Image (cartoon, rainbow, N blue to C red; front, side, top):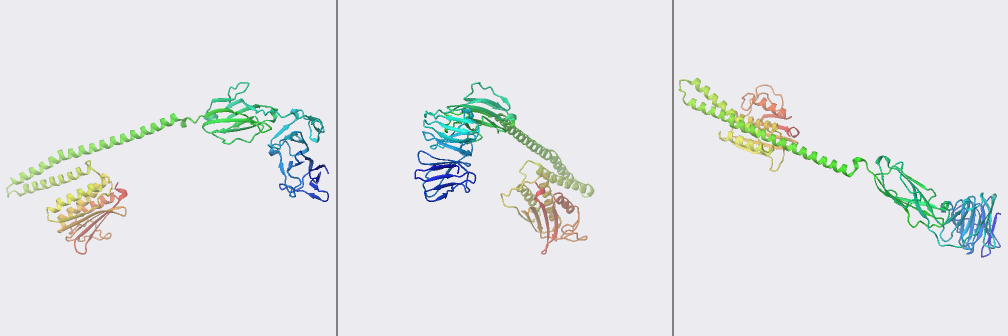
Length: 527
């Protein structure tokens, strides 16, 4: 047995040394009492029944409290270093006249306030003898005596005084490794500190003054802009922050004494971590302005180039029409006049003049096509279809040949390059010329459509159809073959134009008579 105590109901409590354990004797039976928060017997160093009849237990797990020792069910609250005790080994217990509990440990004497749970520590700095405490006693005058292997300590509890809240001051500051001037008496508030992006670390030193030794004070801090909550109170006087992100910060620190009283006003440091050069507002504004200016200048340049190109195309078209077109028209007229004055006996000059007139008229037609292809107008499918319709009606209507033309519905938008729309028009023109010159039919049907990522152009007539001259090279394809069996350079030229656009040309006779020309061109090659 190591310690004894009697509660107000007359029960005797016994604490065991070595094997450990806590027993209660009610006058008839001994019972081993096990607390709900530990499962093995613990070494009991000291037992104390306080003025309110509560049982206090000093053990190797800290300080235990049994509110109702006579209760059938044993219940105990435990306090240890996590609760503020200086040690978990409580060797002796005392109660002073004001109800404070004193726990003697190997690290000094702890005064425990049962009402608040706060702990005040007395150490060698307060005159307590060094060494592990072995026993304690309260004399008739209320003095508290504590004995250790190295001496005897007497503590005379003073009458309760109004609490004095500790005051905390900033005593040292380093920003980015460089010291910041702080007065020798300390500062309550420091502001205007700037940290460069390459020196984004801060060290703060502080100290507090209150109604008890500074060694009993602890400090809690928080960093607004970084840490949101207060840290747990601790004894260190320095805190470091490293690798801080750019932004504004507000550091606060407060002191907490052994009774749990906090500083009325925390000490504070306001500082800014500057962003890198490329993240500052004026740099970002300049970058945005430069980007907007670059986009605007690029847009202006592109518009200028487009305007210049359209002006050049318009000028070329006007020059071709006014100069070369007028000259060719004059040649055709003069040849007609000269042919009218040639006698019947002299046929050779007549045929030559007729040939000159024919060539001039053909050149005027070709020149008109060139002017259309380069003049400034919408480069869409509608413009191409309109030109194809106008040409076919001009050629076929004069020969009494009916013409029907189906095109995509209005609103279908497709931009064609200058090269693509010129090649498509020339292939269609060749088909119409072949029909008008060689087919001998009375009707022509044409269709221009978009399907399966292709433009498909089909031209059908009800004329004489095809006459094969040579071996077939593919379904419906015979090199050099034309409607009615007329051979020439038209069909090979059509194939070359289609191949330049990645497409194919197919020519076949229709079962009911006539000929069909199908041209398929991939859309990806036409823009």
